[in-house]
Image 1 (cartoon, rainbow, N blue to C red):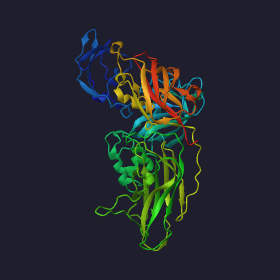
Image 2 (cartoon, one colour):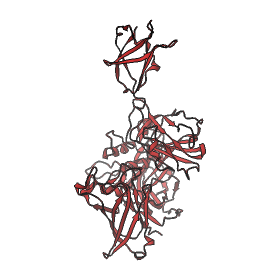
Image 3 (cartoon, one colour):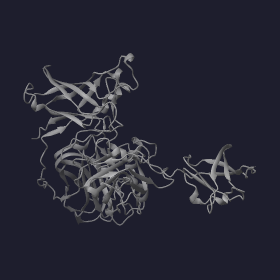
Image 4 (cartoon, rainbow, N blue to C red):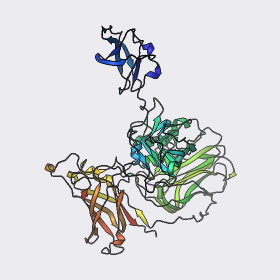
Length: 625
């Protein structure tokens, strides 16, 4: 009797199990003992007619060696042990599934939230709300935390293929969670409980995956698990990162000094396309703003205002003589909430050349577009692209760094200085234009080429919201730091614009009554200037778990030091948030401006020793209305 490697077919080895086979031994009433890593297991198999002896060793560790030998046993005794063989389990089948993913869905049944479908456990489930979650379409979005080159996506349906089993879907991907690219339209699944696989046949790099469920059993939505896989032997990267060190930093801005304006027609596109955040085939101000917005003293937060504006150009001369210098203004008209912009001009190098500023005793300036008064505090990464080509591209590109004042109204944004190489009439066209607001909403309409002295026309203005979300630039937060996990560093998370499990303000973990730390917890929100508030909203942690808010009290303070008690608010454990509409509090005079808010967290659903808060949002009246 022998147990050999030749008996081990590839299909008999997985990452979690090894199936062993051996030849029968002649004799009566036979059973077999198996030695595994030196430990004897008796009677692992009893002889059966017309069946080859086997043993399935399961619940194993992946990529691990196991040693085996076998012997036959009956009432007359035992054979010698076979020669020992060593077998190694395969690599982890899930090794290319990203870790620590989060998810959001358009509908969730409490206890069956979206997070349950990316937790690596097929025994848990995401399901849309039982009472109202049968109205299509549904969306399910996965955040993999890093950008990956994707190989496939697996969908594990519920075991009975019942309500919510997906039948038809669209699949889109995104790098920033804002701009999505469609990969599959009207994909279909057969109704069954078998795992479904979506292969990414084209090159797809993304951080976010969004499924739009267009048809499903009972019109609900459900999944035991969604598993995206990265390509083997590739690693995830921070979106927007050019120098791989695991974080966006100042070094990543240097990328734009060399590659702003590079597009799919340039030979360097393959090496820079990973920073094309908005998938539009060019490195532009959107990509710059994504990186720059994460830097500066305060990170960028959206104002929730609509974007408006149009970029035009205006030369100061229309008829040009050979050798004559002239200037081209980049003019933004009717702008609202503009945080970054770019404008591309196509020039014929046989007709025009760039004129750079050369100061006495220093080298000529590097930028080919000079900042104007309105853009003096913005990053200027303007550049000349396509050098050596028949046509060259001037890309004027600007962005705020972190959170800063946005561009509003009509003004000159930049000036480009050129020289005519021959007698001609100004004929430079605008080939690309982009305005980006603080929410990464964009306007790509190409504006006018104005005549010298001509003013831009009126720009249609969207309706302004009645109220605006205040950001970390407007508020300072403080409180009882000695009670907090991470101390005073916990409080800025309450106004960082992120509602997630990775950005919670929490009481210290693992405390007891003897530690003297418990609820209530007082937190002060001081406004940088007196503000007419309309409402505030306090967000529970997203997951259905410990520390959720049960009750809080709020107080407001005006410029004169008057205090307004806004009362106690109850919060359910399944409530996403609680909102206080200040117009309902008649003790606060209409139009009164406040300088501070105090929120007292009195109770949590987990008792006085636990509290986890995701975010506090304050809304103010929009003075534009």
